[in-house]
Length: 358
Ligand code: HEC
Ligand code: HEC
Image (tube, rainbow, N blue to C red; front, side, top):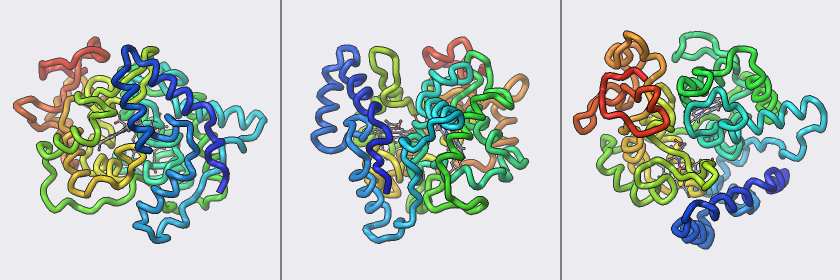
């Protein structure tokens, strides 16, 4: 196994400094030291190498057996070549980890790719990029066509990064260097994997069906106990004094929109089971993961970008959401889920009306 710790020497310290610098951040400092003391802090926060936590995570995920012993290990960042190809790979990596800074014109929320594809897209069961690259081009039911890797990345810009609220008003145009550099990074990362075969660790992994129908009421309690400490009681995440996101928002105007995969309870449940709370994979039971996913996904967020002009939420339900496990088009506490926010309010308070198409 390559020395994973050396893949990211600066990020942990920067993040720690960022957390310590959070405005009036006594509570966060205390929180930070608690997390560190109890070994709960993400490795990028402590600057520790990932070897130990990863070994533990893998052991937990495999229930102690060797089921995942064959998980692919992507090459260490230090092996990115010092040539023009390597420069493109490094730009792709920078876009992936800090999308709002390095692909600024196309990001309409507070997220980065690495917020959902953890450890810079390296972590198994958080839809790692080394597992994705070899299986494209691939047919997708979502847009009923063969998707190139460029199409697929465009999809995550459109929905997960809410590109409709970005300075350019949409995802990078086809042929953009943003796609070129991201693909160079994914290609480099998947070196040695056969094409056309889905590797172990791809996607978010499987989660069993819950014994009871997912409940956002039960999920609220799971959230308060396991998630609010980082993502905030209001789910809006936390930033440092420089406005850099330390913990990403899970709903509201600065999170992913109603067209994103994560708005589906089944997708969120699988992601959460295998990845959250951060650095404690599989802490939650199957039922808790489904319940908290239902809670997270039952809050307002930016509109589905396909639901524009005359297209109502109901039309969009019939066209794109009828087979989804989600709250889009349903009422939660008397409020319709789906209309989004007026675009002028995109970065401010959630709108109370139900008529806006964003
Ligand atoms: C809000 C969470 C979120 C963010 C942010 C996000 N994605 Fe995704 N991404 C997803 C989900 C959900 C999937 C579908 C995973 C699955 O198929 O199990 C996905 C899938 C992908 C895939 C295909 C994976 C596969 O195995 O087929 C690629 C490639 C991808 N994302 C790239 C990106 C890039 C590049 C960015 C940043 C520009 C990004 N994503 C941002 C949630 C996100
Ligand atoms: C120790 C802090 C911490 C805890 C506790 C935690 N998270 Fe996270 N979570 C993060 C961080 C940090 C990220 C982004 C990952 C990264 O950038 O490495 C994240 C990402 C996410 C994402 C994807 C990004 C987004 O904004 O939608 C979801 C969904 C999520 N967490 C849900 C949860 C849920 C549900 C819980 C409770 C079961 C939880 N988290 C507990 C720190 C935490």
